[in-house]
Image (tube, rainbow, N blue to C red):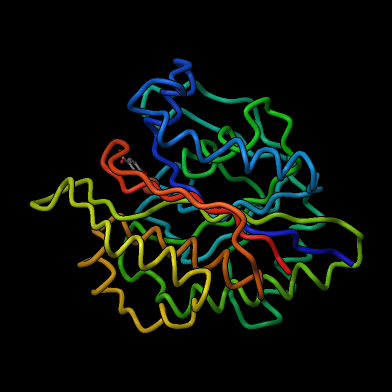
Length: 276
Ligand code: DHB
Ligand code: FE
């Protein structure tokens, strides 16, 4: 049966993709961010997952305001990246695992999560930047993208995100193949890119979220969506991806954690949680 090895969170800021392209990892501005990744890369090299489930929020490349699925799962043989206007280099297509995708979709719908299945899906920086951070050589396993809506209200509640993750965990563990799976939750932490509060970052709230996501994720479901926007900023709602990832894991131990502000406009958090 399939097994979940652990979960990894990271911010997915486009400027990070530019820093990778320019080889600026050791630059004084970037070093406190990039130092989070070598221990995670070493863990991945040791554990050798067969598949990565990449939970991210599309920002308008794969879906737009005219068609906005609340939860979408990729079911393609490969996923293409496209130019989003950030000036990032376009990356080669990412190999998928369609049979595993269809198992996840079947299982999620059977568990009454009526997700959107995508046999074609362009993946944006929310998906690609974390893949580059964790597998800088490009030697990543096949990937399954899962996107949740944080673009157009109403967005999912924190409870729904955690429940989605719990159902996803069951879906993975019921797959009969002996594969080892790692789950990414990308985005966040606090940031707001537009409006009067542009540039807003909330370290105290981010640190509380990073602690509770390990020790007591259920407690975070008491936070309303309005409160999440207020405390984390309008794009800080990407924390929902962390909740989805966390729900799938069950009991965990934290192997590494890093927080640094600011990276571009964002409180950048990175964590490695291993399933026990
Ligand atoms: C930034 C952060 C994001 O999560 C994003 O999707 C785009 C930009 C930023 O901080 O610049
Ligand atoms: Fe984002």
